[in-house]
Structures are given as structure tokens and as C-alpha cells.
Image 1 (cartoon, rainbow, N blue to C red):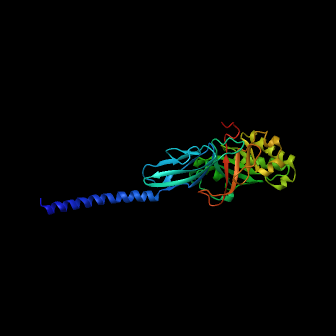
Image 2: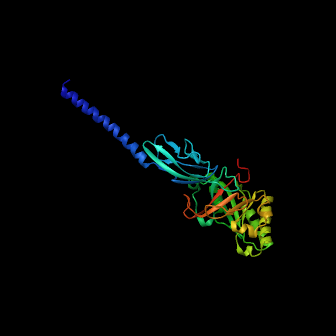
Image 3: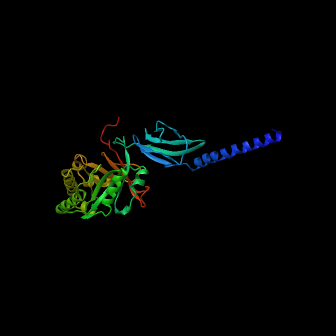
Length: 310
């Protein structure tokens, strides 16, 4: 074999190697460039968790928390709140880093262990893709059954689709009654509509109309307790919903605190100024969630709210 022939063979061999290597290098770089975290910011409570996913990632991902005592992260990207504060979760893939800022909070008087993020919906949200909702980190949905004597046009579809997506489901009835007879008629309409359905969360009575508040604390308290007792008699867990500012003026302590009804309290902002224990806190009415085209109410559910926090 001549020297010229050997050189030619080496050139051909080198060309083949480069041809094989370049796509691999390109694909790796392309994959790393295309990779993206599903969230760049996350709010948690002490004891709650959220899932991070590095989309379009090809290769081993190394997860790390800048402050593990504030929020930890496991090998699968599951982030768990440990202590109030802020930190950053970093996903490393090859030579690239992807970051998510995490804020962990606590809530005075409430055990936040296992806290879960959720939404409440009605016909105002239109057609909802609940699979996308769940994939966006939502764990439960509370849906309107109806208001007054009218059934919500989206309730039955929302119920089927939310169950199919694997979300925890609760429901509420927006009550407009200003008399005992109207109250019972609306409660019966609610119970008839939900007959045969199963719920993971309570059946709530939603009281927030000034036509009811103007009738005084005794009337409003009786409205809530009567509705809730009818729900309980039908075999469901009862609860009430209203704004934090309405609880003291319009609900007696016996109903709001001593009844055993699940308390769903609305106060929009980053702090809940509620003197008693809230099982569910509606903290925003301008939330954005994948699968919903409109604004949506955002909530935190505290399944261990009334247990001691160790």
C-alpha cells in the first residue's frame, strides 16, 4: 500500500467519523436548547408539594435546591416545602441549567401539611380541558351546580370530565333565597341535581348576596345551617363559602366554627386574615391555568387544617 493510498484511507476514515459524530453533537445541543421547565416560579406551603418537569429533555437530569431546608427536590423533580422562605430549584442537563424560583409560606393557625392547589369553576369558564388543568399542577376542582333555581349549564360536563382527568371534585350552590321556603326549594334543587354523584370534597352553600345579609345574622346563619343539614342528611359532607369579611358580621360562631361544616373562606391576596381555621382558602379570582381560556378562581385546600402541626 503506497503512502498516498494510506493518506487517502485516513482522510476517508476521518470523514466518516465526523459525519457520525456531528449529528449526535447537534442533537444533544438541540435537545438541551429545546428543553424547558414546566414552571419558572412556584408557590408552596410548608408540607405541600409541586411537580417540576423538564420538557423535551434527553439525558440524565440532576436536580438541586439552593436551600434544601426551605424546599427540597427529589430525583424526579418533586419539590416539597419545608420552611417559610425562598429558594431556587435547579435542573442540570449536560452543561445547561434550568431554574425555578420557589416561595414557601406558612399559615397562622392552620396545619398546611399536604396542602393542595385547586380551582373553582362555573359556566363563566366555558369549556374546560381538565387534563391540561391537572397537568398544570391543579389537584382539585369545586364546580358550581347552580344558582337560585337554575342548574349551571356546564355542571354535568365539568363533573364527568374532571372525574375522568383524576381530579378531586367538590361542588357548590349559589343560594339566593330570602325566605325559608325558597331556601328549602333551592337546597332540594341542588340535591336532586347531584343525586347519584360522588364527591371527594364537600357540597358547599355559597352565601354572598346583600339581599340575604340585609336580613341579618340570624337569618344568614339559619340559611347556612339548614342547607348544610339537608346536605348532611342526603349523605354528603356539608360546607359553606363566603368572603372572610362576611363571616363575623353574618355567621354565628356556632355555625362558622362549632358546627363541623367545612369552612371555605375567600380573601384575595397573599395573606389570609381569618381568626378561625379555614379548610379551603380562595386567594385569587384572576388566576391563569392551562386548559381554561378565562380567568379562574384559585384556592388552597388544607386537608390537615385542624390537626396539630408537628
